[in-house]
Image (tube, rainbow, N blue to C red; front, side, top):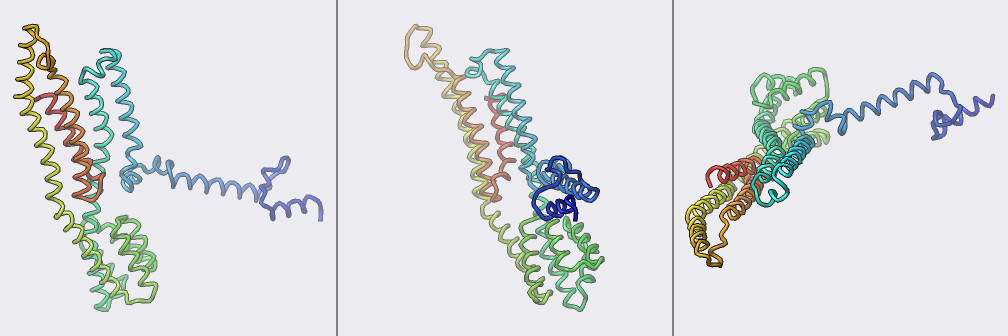
Length: 344
């Protein structure tokens, strides 16, 4: 056995890569293995992380709506910096403290950042609600047909002909997989992954484990149907019970705006007029120092901050999710901005 052959055998058994050794030439097999490894690594980059986001942006954003912040936050930051530079260059540095233009820049930068996320989250919540609403009926229908003597592929094939709202497309995909002799448990796990809702994952996991343990599939499906039905009802009941508190949060914001409007139109206006009269007499004191624009800006800040965070609280209380409250935050922020810019 020659020295080169001994070296090749040693390198094949060691953890070193031949390409790392100076002067070592790769043979055809090693080059093909290296190319395959490189292609696998590139494919992994595409299927995960930022590479997958670039290739399937809408799918990644739908799975995790907060991913849209990777797009909206840089845009909002750019808008803010552009507005800041414009204000300072045209009105001076003191305008940041004396003028409301910078407030407008901040408000619109915030809206650019949160409105896309609020809309995507709202659409995703509607999709999840529609899917979870249909799950109990799907499991119950499959269990009933299975109890009547049908095999699972036939039962799912019959169910796939029906209408289950947003779940229909996923059921027909499940039926197509089972028609190609994919085992029921494996096809169901893929079905749960495609649906991608917490309730679907919980139900599929229950059915898969019970089926692998050797339980009656019909009973397991019926138990899953009852579980999803109770879970969905409890979720709706919680939402309905918390609705009154969410309304209280929203109404308190409008009450705050109304109080400020009354305060500005009566008390502050009267104080400012009295202050101007005192100033004409040459007297000094508190009455001569009323700056109505300062108080209006202060109240506008308070109203916009309260509106934004009240929306987050309403989302957490009403829907159990802070991000779901961004739609209320955006609406109340716009209302507060319009109120102070055009009416107060």
